[in-house]
Amino acid sequence: MSRDHAIVVLSLQRLGDVLTAARVTSALGREGARVEVVHWDAADQAAALLPEVAERHALPYTTLRARARHDPIGAFAQLRRSVHDLAARGFARAVNLTSTRPACLLAPLLAPNGTVSGPFVDDGGEYRAPHPALDYLNTRGVDPELNVFAHHDLYAISAGVPLTGFAGLGKTSEPHERDVDAILAVHVHGSSHDKSWRDSADDWADTLVELRRRFAVRIVLLGAPSEAEALTPLAATTGAELFLRPLDETAALLRRCRGLISVDTVAIHLAAAVECPTLVLRQGPARGHAFLPGPQALLVDDARGSTTPRDIVELVARHMFDDTTDPKVAADLGRRLRLQRVVRDTNGYLGTCRPEWLPRDLQADERDRAQRTERDAWHRRFVEARDAPC
Image 1 (tube, rainbow, N blue to C red):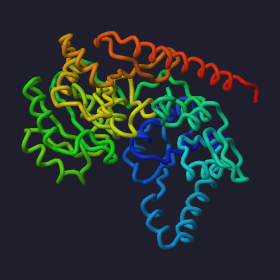
Image 2: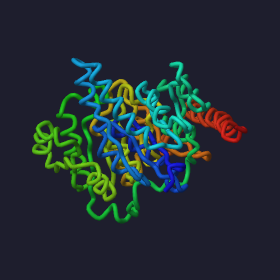
Image 3: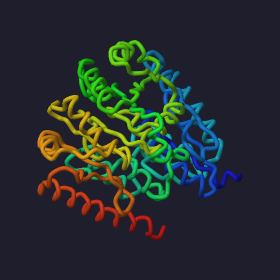
Image 4: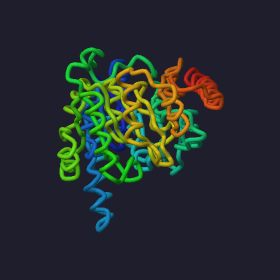
């Protein structure tokens, strides 16, 4: 294929964020472009799952960072060589899905004679955001009170990628196939400590034991191989199974699972990509719309740390097993916890709404309507930018 149609996609982020680039690479590849991806080497497993990608280029994040501490000039020279080799490939377009300074500096360098979609830093050192979706992202950011968009939706729309029509990572299981092994997957460790649901393993142990008792399911603990020492005692005391496998094998497992219970980490984005129902326990910086996974998720925002193991079991029963929630229990959950169901609106953007099985709450209903109205208004601006003459 001619280099006139080659596109490089930059996703210099963590594993979960890289997975959200799947919709972009899929759309660009199906349009007939040759798609190549640049990512940090620590995200190799996620980059390998991206569809319609002809070639992947891993930049050595850990090596560069370590070298920069004692040899910053050498680290710069190493990165410069990598960039020079990539720029020589003659990309017609660079699509940047990251607002970090390294990505914004690299984007125009990788397509020196082409175009850039997404944020970048120009020759004069000025930051450029050539789309109103990026302006919105930069002004509202991760503010849970102001921002009403998932970040990966904003990056996709700024790249001209439709927000509908993406089937996910391969063919997903039908609902009845998910029931065969009756598996519940659980991911207890977040990417940072402030995303953890509980410091004590006892709360998790009580939760897992009660889940096994109530639903007669296999409990599988997900994690990285490096977490084996931390997770083994929890598995031993609860009868759970350890599954510390690469992302592609984890994706295959999640396709068969009845659901996933997880803190905010790569697992929720992987589950979204294979349409696995998910209960997300969100703490700290994970609140708000910025990092919404997908429409199969039920979010528990627990700023006061009041969620109990019994609460989790009740929410799993309603969200993954379609059990009817006792009205008194539902009222208690709705009063103590902020519960939100992730939905996709008529324009294709992810948003949230109050679960329909909770008692009516006029204030929550008004908040949901206001968020939909704001997304609709901004969508019109985004469409105008798309349709504006060059």
